[in-house]
Image (cartoon, rainbow, N blue to C red):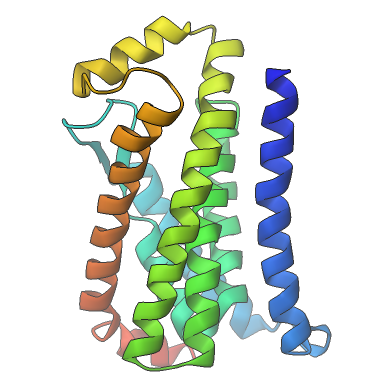
Length: 229
């Protein structure tokens, strides 16, 4: 039964992302869009930057379980999405994930969830900004993307990540709960209190930091971005 829930949740999250991308394509006559060399270069550059941040620049935060780590790969992905559109942001996320996969320690499950979370954040944000290219559009897009990612993170952790560690990595519920309670004694189970006291605040703080840094560096990186136009 638990495996059934894992598959259903993963399919629903992937379907949501696919529908979002397809809606964007249909609305912009994407069937006529050609993948140019320039587009590939853009994606490769930002994908490489995102991969470096994803692999090497990460750290735990003491108030959250030790297995939850901050990483800032979403900054170049958001910049690419804002500069070149949702398709570019999605493609950069794919490249980053593929680069990281050979170094996985979770049989690719952690990378899959990070891919889903990042896509849920970046694609809506870039989609809204593409329609409203001003500060209000940027803020609205980022807020919508943040909410979408929080929902994806809660579902992904409850029905994919935690069951994976329990079934495949042979962790017991008590083992994982012990790690969680070392950081926050308010976590009483691996579903709702774990989501309330760990998943939601962790991702909200991380997303706020990502948004802040993106706003700070976006103008600075415009000259570099303009050279790739």
